[in-house]
Amino acid sequence: MTTIAKLDPAVFFRRIPLAPHQMLDRVTRTQDAIVLCHLGVARLDREQWSLTIDGLVERPLTLRFGDLMRYPKTEVTSSHQCAGSPLAPLEPTRRICNIRWGGVRLADVFADCGPSVRAKYIWSHGADFGEFGGATVDAYVKDLPIARVEADALIAYEMNGSALPAEHGFPARLVVPGFYGTNSVKWLTRMTLATTRAPGPFTTRWYNDPVLDDAGRDTGETTPVWSIAPESVIVSPAPEEAIELSVEREIWGWAWADGGVHRVDVRTGDGDWRPASLEPAHGREWQRFSIPWTPRQRGAVVLASRAQTKHGLCQPISGRRNAIHAVPVNVV
Ligand SMILES: Nc1nc2c(c(=O)[nH]1)N[C@H]1C(S)=C(S)[C@@H](COP(=O)(O)O)O[C@H]1N2
Ligand SMILES: [Mo]
Image (cartoon, rainbow, N blue to C red; front, side, top):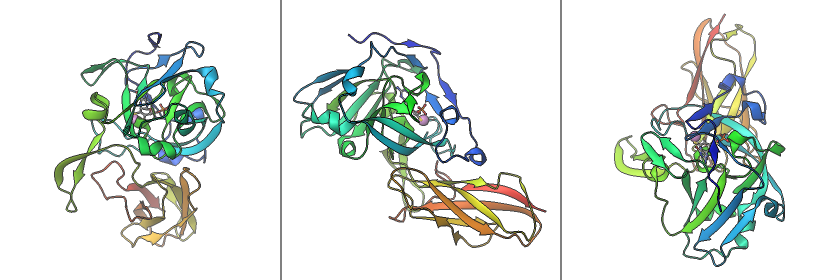
C-alpha cells in the first residue's frame, strides 16, 4: 500500500542559513529555516500519501491526506532546534529557528484509535530510507514518550501558513514542540504504539547523551535527546562589531527551553552576570531578552548570555550543545 518514496537527493542534505546575528525575525521565514535530512529528501505525492497508526491501539487506523482535514486545525509557534550532528552530540551549533506550524493535534487523532494503557512510546516512521554514518535503514524512525501526546504534539501539514516544502516533510510530519528537531519525523507514514523504546540506530546508537554527575564526570548512563535544554543566543551586537565608547546600546537575543525560560543573565567582559529583561514565555515560542550596555573602556570585549529555567536548569560554560554563547566585539 505504501509506495516506496523517491529520494532527491538520496544522500544527507542540510541547510543552515542563519548565524545568530542574522536571526532578526521573531518568526523565521521558511527560506531561512534550518533543514536537516539524514538520508535525503523524500518526494511524496499528497494523493498517494497515507499514515497508519497501529500497535497497541484498539482500532488501527489509516488516514489519507483528506482525512486529516476532518480534525480541527491547530497552530503552534515553536522554537525548532537541531541538536547538531549525532556524531558530535555535545558540540554547540546554534541551529535554531522559530516556526509557525499548522496541523492537527496528535491527541485528537489518537482519540479515534483507542491507545492501550500499556502503550508507553510511539515509534514514528518517515518515508525516507538508506544509509547514514555506516548504518542502513528501511526508514528514519524516532520514538516519543506517549505522555507527550497530551502536550501540543502535532501532525503538521503547514509551515508558516503554507504547505510544507518537500525538504520539511511534505505532505505531513510530526512536530513535537519543546523537543529537539530530530524527534519531529518528516514524511510521516506510520506510528506504532509500543511498550519499549524503538529499535534502530536513530534511537539506540545516536541521539542518546551521556549523563554527567555534578562534577561533570561521565556516569556511563545515557538519556534520550528529547527535551530542549535552556539556551540563548546574542543576536546583537554581531561578532567583531565596532561598538562606540560611552554610548548606551542594547544587547539583545533569543532564549528558549522546553517549558520556557525563566531568566536570562548577560555578562560583558569579565564583569558580573546581570539580569536581562526577558519577555514572558508565550506558548512554545522563543523569548526575546535585552539589556542596556554603556561600554566605559576601549578594546576587545566578550559578551555572553545565559538562560535558566524555572527549575534552575542553567546553560553550562562548555562541554554541552547548549553551552553559553559568547560574542567578541571591539569597543572603539
Ligand atoms: N524522516 C525524517 N525526519 C527527520 C529527519 C530525517 O532525517 N528524516 N531529520 C530530523 C532532524 S535531525 C531535524 S533537526 C529535523 C529538521 O527539520 P527541518 O528540516 O524541517 O527543519 O527533522 C527531523 N526529522
Ligand atoms: Mo537535527
